[in-house]
Image 1 (cartoon, rainbow, N blue to C red):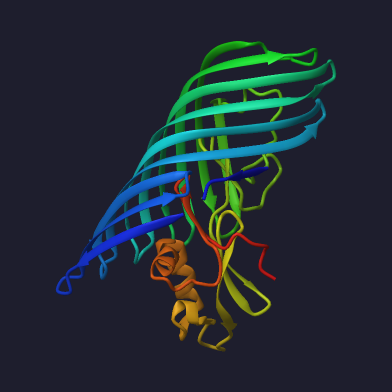
Image 2: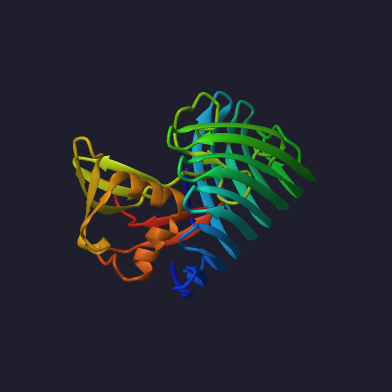
Length: 322
């Protein structure tokens, strides 16, 4: 599966040194793929915050594969507008998030079945609501996604097993997850756009015998998303985004009896921080890493920035860390 969305952003922050309250606004354009704007208010000492964000995103995907029935090549694209509201506490990590939106999509698939070849298109529009409560510090959450809409399907060829028709989609996905342990348990009912296809491989780790793993599934927008993580490899500490891109944070330092530390690179201001605090910081708010780029502290390569399905993406589009 290949999928994507790519950016720049601006931020304005005002604060009060007396009671630690703050307000900030943020606007971004990610190439031609996405624009969004939002605001956040809170208290930097207590950690309480409230944020809202409105976005319009364009996404795309391709998938080729085969199964017991035949082989296929799938391509798709879409645009969805969404509004995200979130309340939480950056000290405890607890949060509640709601994303509502409308998604207009187009899918095209060609392939072979036992009866011969087929060519299929599915076009539609759906509305969705994602409701999630969790703890970003422990990277656990409970999520519900309810949505549906209308579709139009064409299908031709000797191998076509599904009709040319129009109708409606309606789905309900319930999920519990522990991203740090790479455990996702998702149960979906109803009809999604992918149910309407001759073939589709769910490569996520939400079930289907593919656990454990870090790939999640969304029935709207970009279908497969991967949470951000902190990884240690060969004595170095990396922040790896959901799309596999990464940023080198520093060196891993063992402190017997004191816990591990990270010697930050010059790009992140140098010095040392505890590994636990860095891991907690990225888990609670990927905005921390977004801020580093916004402050011009990451200068060693091209970077991408985006939010797909509520997940921040930031890093260097390059090969995996050594």
